[in-house]
Amino acid sequence: MAATKANAPLSSGPAARTETLSPQKGREKAEGKTLTATLRKSPIGANPSVKATVQSLGFRKMNQTRELPDNPAVRGMLKAVDFLVAVEGETYLRPERSRYKIWRSRSDKKHKRGN
Image 1 (cartoon, rainbow, N blue to C red):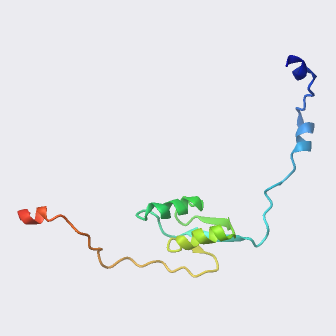
Image 2 (cartoon, one colour; image 1 turned 90 degrees about the vertical axis):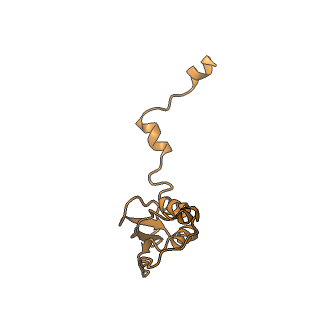
Image 3 (cartoon, helix red, strand yellow; image 1 turned 45 degrees about the horizontal axis):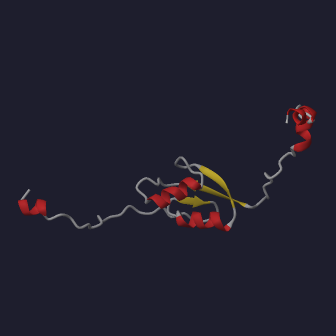
């Protein structure tokens, strides 16, 4: 094994690196194939799947704007969180604050005691 390592050509240095790497390979972005989306409402209090969708879209802060690729997967994710995210070119209607509290069943123990 030591003999093969010694006989192997060493390809270190800037000349060897420029031959193997090509500029912008795999990073080409087609013009007009992106969507501009802005996080308008906080996902705090939303269910975990909505929070995960917002995070996977790359949003970290309120009013953060992202350029996202225009493909069916991203469009579906944006549709799932359309009440939180505004997309450029589409109307965004901010959801109104709920006026009535959602009724939940409660324990009768406290009320039976008279407290």
